[in-house]
Image (cartoon, rainbow, N blue to C red; front, side):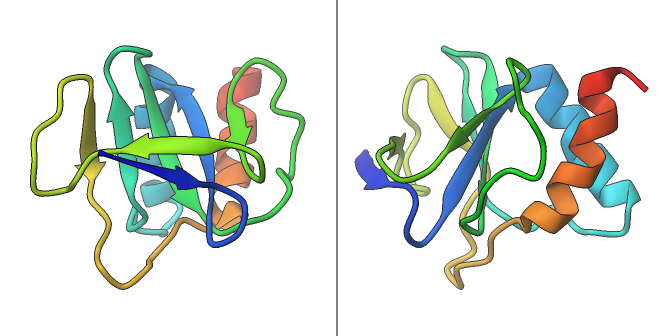
Length: 114
């Protein structure tokens, strides 16, 4: 297990698990492969997408949490199983991250229910 600081090399978007799966499917339908790392926190029932740093392109309200500077994220070693935390999509070793340009446009209609 490691504790990593957000905000410099990456930010993260934490969403409820059901919304997260819908988000990943919507990103894929938009032609953007879900190539960034996705952490599953079963205790909080949420998915955490690692993405390039930047301010959210929308008001997240209570639908999601943007993790950036001043936030730390506990992550498991991709080769080990840890209770409560697991990689749904492990880091690829090349630093591939989700792009906010691909994620936020598809998140907006999911959050608003359209």
